[in-house]
Length: 117
Image (cartoon, rainbow, N blue to C red; front, side):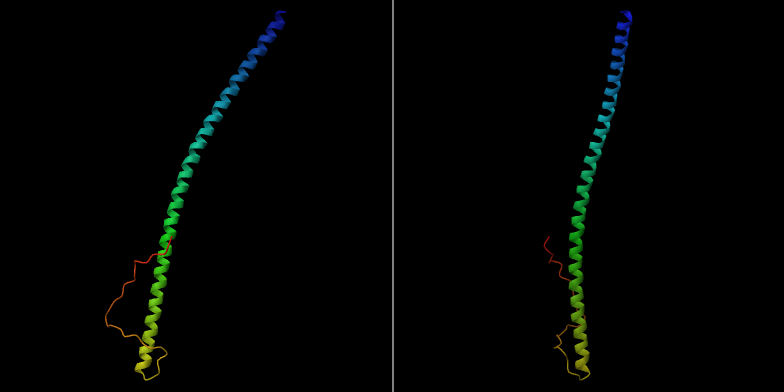
């Protein structure tokens, strides 16, 4: 009878140790989960910041593209006007009527127009 009680006591003690081991493992895993949640929150915030930066860069690029397009169009018109002016001066018939130009006048691009976002 003492042996049966001793065996039951040892089994109970072993079960208690196992429960404590499992509780410690659960606590450790919970800490890992909490650390992972903090990392996820931090990364989500960083992603939002990067998305905002990307949107700003895309808007800036669109403005730059529009400015480049405008400057290229102005340059093409200027070259055509120069071509027509030379053509007219050499006595040839101009392909399009030259625009009157003001000498030494510099033009600045119109920066008030921005593409819609």
